[in-house]
Length: 103
Image (cartoon, rainbow, N blue to C red):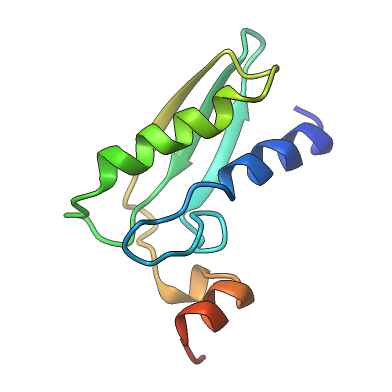
């Protein structure tokens, strides 16, 4: 996958907002990797801010909907992992400012 396509995918994922925090999953640092195979299957490896996140299903569905708009993506699989564990250090500067997190 070329950089332009990866940027398009990450841009689409920036439209997915964590309903509890009000910040997108990319800036929160929840998206670890995205791979698009030859058949157009996008595999998004991501985590959640907590293991027991009650909105996990909602976020997964929003990821699939966001990528469905890209013509190169025929289907999306979301793999939720908890290793490495998420921490506030993974957030972008934008997310930290939006949430009032100090380093």
